[in-house]
Length: 446
Image 1 (cartoon, rainbow, N blue to C red):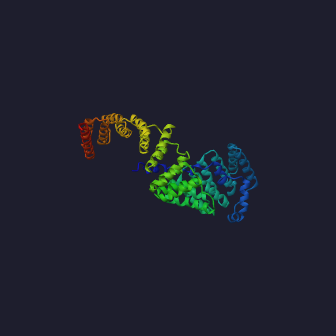
Image 2: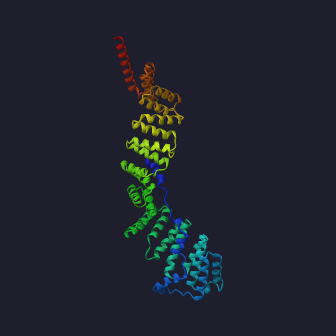
Image 3: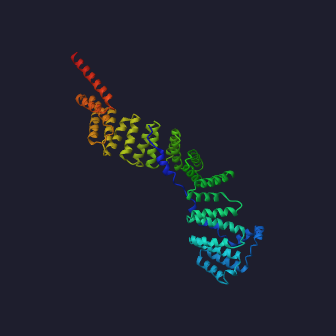
């Protein structure tokens, strides 16, 4: 009989998905997709002359360049107040009309950098929106800024706006990278559009694999969650096996073990959990208890007992009545009665019901400690809460029989026989006892 139901644990564990969208680093956002040094920006635009000429991008005049460079130097030194004052002065002197669209775009770009550095994401977003509102800015600047806008929406957990912004970015870029597809997948995940989320993260993974690159752990994790939500157990297992190949961690061994359980692959379920255990990964009491249950299910009670015994001794497994009961049952199934008895004694002592005293009586009977069996079972019956009192009275009758208290044995068997589930066995014991008493009388007379 299976003692453990993995699906109870699995559903909760698979809900934990690492989210990258809200963890976009400021430095990454600034260096990869946001504000760049003016000299670098101009160099990039020089390489795209054909695009700039098509758009007729206005030139960046020297006096404007010098002011922007001054503001940039202050911003890079984290003197944001000075940088902002320089930009304010550029806007104030002659108004916005004094600057052409490209110059104004650079001003707003630097404003956005300052606001972002201050973690004022709302104003940073507004500044970036002002960048792309300018006509005839270089294509590279528009592409980078639109991606930054999408990221900022995700940082603020405005998922649908982030999705919309990212889709706009996909329209203007020639070569979207895998990270962009993952970001879009995260957005769809947050809006619970799991089909689109899965499509995009699979796209990102396939792009990496096509280049013989190992996809990132978080990508596989997101895919694993999405497969699980679609009840695609096979794909979930495949993804966990890949995660263990490249990113071997306890959580994946444990999750894989439970997923094998859902597939009814008991031997693989045990092997996965055991692999984690022998590597010392299962440091939680609940995990070690699960390991013990799996050993019991596989009919390897000795290993189950060793797991529980070690855990209780080093206090990683809590010394509860239930855990001592598991330990006692494991030792008993392993035919280690001398070890089962003290474990069941602890289990019974920590319980407020009579059931465990009745079970302890069974173990005493196995260990031929009949007087202790009698005492324990009577204590359990008087305390109440025994699930099968008829079985307990059968064991009680056996114990009385072995200490030659035949009247009490008969009384116990008759009480057990009042339950139709034990009527047959009680009658057989009474018949056996009568024949034994007759044999003894015959010997005495002879």
